[in-house]
Image (cartoon, rainbow, N blue to C red):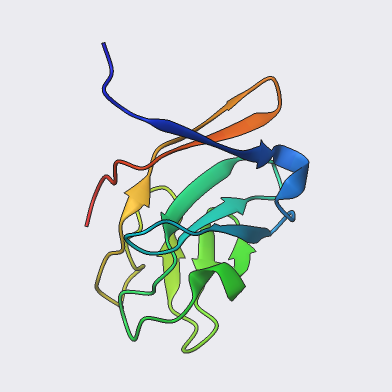
Length: 109
């Protein structure tokens, strides 16, 4: 039995392809990303480098480029790609019948 609380955040088409949609929660914004293959990922909307808004970055493959200093952050884990180091929290997501659900229980950082 899972204790995750799932928040419905809309349908896949609500999230721009190669972009993100921001979900505002009390503990801080979460960016929900969509890749060119319609894979959905969620990260804390804060780059581990200088706190840049990852939701304003460009999705490239399964990474997002921070708009401030072009750090590449892995969508699957929230980890910065080498040579950069750092990690932002990632959040489980699931898609059921085209609806996107976000768990507010962070994994990683």
